[in-house]
Image (cartoon, rainbow, N blue to C red; front, side, top):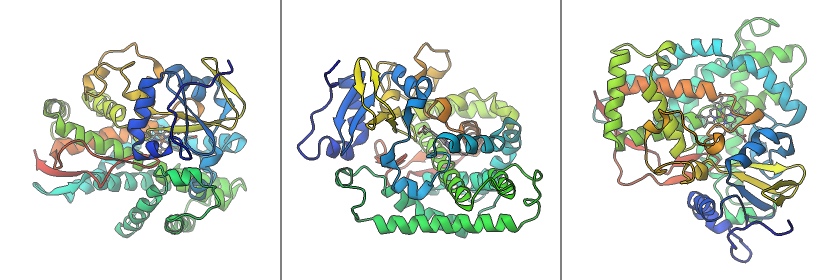
Amino acid sequence: MGTSPPGPTGEPLFGSSRRYADDPFRFLSACEEAYSGVVTFDLGPVETYLLTEPEHVERVLVADADRFAKPEFQDDALGDLLGKGLLLSEGQRWREQRRLARPAFQMDRLTDFANDIVAHNERLLDGWEDGTVVDVERAMTRVTLSVITDLMLGTDLSDERVQTIREALEPLGARFEPDPVRFAAPTWLPMPGDSTYDTAVETMESVIRDIVAERRGSEGDAEAGEGPDDFLSLLLRAQERGEQTDTQIRDEMMTMLLAGHDTTALTLTYSWYLLSQHPTVEQQLHEELDEQLGDEPPGMADVRELDLVERIINESMRLYPPVYVMFREPVESVVFDGYTVPEGSAVMLSQWAMHRSERFWDGPEQFDPGRWADNRDRPRFAYFPFGGGPRHCIGKHLAKLEAKLILARTAQEYRLEYTREGEPDLWPTLTMHPRNGMPMQLHER
Ligand code: HEM
């Protein structure tokens, strides 16, 4: 078919980029609703195609995965930050690194992780007091950051380092806010905010450099084939065998540190918000915890029994998917529903739009953990918070374990009450944050 797919017309010069930047969530949902299937719009120098059928998502991520690459246009700023770590690398290099990382995420390690996760959460609870108002996003970030550096970098983060990282995260996030001027400008053109971004990248690099140097200096890691299986140890041992450069280690650690904490913290943050808005579900959660756990902290064996905890996490990631949109670039022309999506264009898959579509969900805007109780006949890729196919999230099982344990342990002790009016305003960066945090009042149970 020679015709172009349907889509919003946009304005001269900016196309749809100003509408997108203004509110990407509303824009993505409006496109999904108005033109199901393949949608095209102008979002900058490359043609953009939003695919909104689960079969399309399945083709891009699974069946035709080798015809889609991580996009070039993400490679400059994001590339400066993450380099060729697991999230952005391609081909043979990606395959080798993914194979190298695998033992760090294996099921037998997850069992040990459970106790560590609860211990990190305990430290948070020790600092909480009945009646105080805390920024729950910040609190959840603190715990998930400690967990990821402990489990993947084998390091206990000092408060000072946490503070350094936290201060760098905001400018890093701000760089990826959709910005129509940036969309339209060539990548070499200096823009306001660039130097703050570069400084934040350097700060993160120096934290990682220090952690790696400390680990290198510690016993055990140098003995090839021996020692712990955290990802950094695996990389250092590979380096001993001459299979890993310093840059590769930097890139993998940066990727792990950033991809491995923010998304899980967001899942928890939105879960607390949703629970506070749905007291009946909150009450049922407390009953489940009291019945299954009593006063004992949850462990690996309990996690499988906590059905409602699992459903709350699933439903929270449906309504507030931390990764709300993903991009791919076709390496050759690919046809969807008779429309040609050309090589080099930008393909968008949106969790936000699909997870809230009336086509797949009854009452899509409602928080209803019960919808996960029955084994549903909805299409497989109407829900994909962790992506799919060969590039699916390597941390999926760890993230779910972590979210469930932290939610369960914290809800044994506290009820959290949202202190603002109305739904949280959302801040779109690479991931979806509540704007200005998530203030909640702590009520001891
Ligand atoms: C709720 C929490 C999480 C969510 C929603 C999430 C989401 C995702 C998504 C959607 C992707 C696919 C990106 C794409 O295909 O372009 C991905 C990839 C990835 N995630 Fe996660 N993630 C979570 C937790 C984690 C954790 C805990 C880790 C590390 C321990 C992690 C590390 C990674 C890495 C390294 C990749 C790249 C994998 C590859 O391409 O081989 N993520 N994640």
